[in-house]
Image (cartoon, rainbow, N blue to C red; front, side):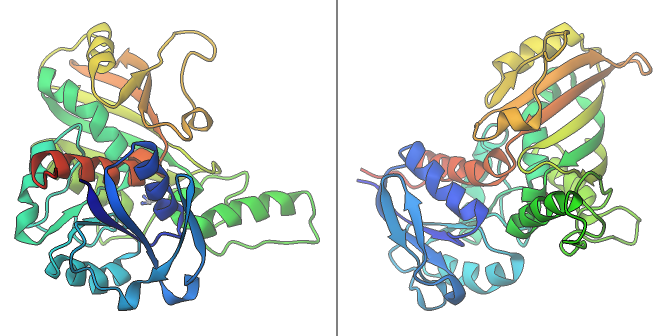
Length: 340
Ligand code: 2RA
């Protein structure tokens, strides 16, 4: 016996990946429904070998459905997630709406799987931001060994993090560079993204940091340990899929780079590719479609007493969104909603 599962926002990049991953991982589904806004109504999406016709989210009754994976923006989530949750369906939400709510667990299953049990307060579990998810998978096993004091992270985030419009803008601008009569001005991003990098993701806050940077701080504290200090600079780069991060970590105790490498090799969800030679590291193009978070360039930071630098790459649509959501559903199934 399996679950009745709804995927909300099934025609978007993340919604489609959710359906792919549910099928790939053979999540025990008895019945599945793909929900979308009225403007995408009737469009078709794949679920393994099957094709699903999307149904109208606005009129859908979640009563009797076990789990709803939400991949819509915060505005739509605000309307439909409480509706689903109040009908008894557990919502796993990819938007930022509930991430900082004390009554909603924020879960990365490799890091804090036990937190799913807190879903009962609102019937909602939050999925973290893509840039946080991949980083905490690497931080947690190192924190368990040597206690992290401070993290300084710079991100190199792909345009798919900004949705289909982000992907289209990079594609169209790149083509237009070779055809100057076909000018494609910046729309989704604030400056040209083709052949450029933009140190700005999400809105600016009073502190001068962007919301994306603030999210990395707040979410790392909620998922791993509130005592860890994090400072982030988040940058959009002209890459279609795959976020990269240069992470500097300061520990309470000394941690040798070789030991850090060994710890990460054993860590769940992590793949270490770290040869100190040309090409002995992972780039975003190589991580697309993969489940793992790849770690390379592990080395001592000799400018501080207990420091390590590393390079972290992951598929932002998978570990950063859809995969983590499906892993939460699996964890919820194993710990709380057993069937059969
Ligand atoms: C981005 N972090 O890359 C966002 C997506 N969740 O824009």
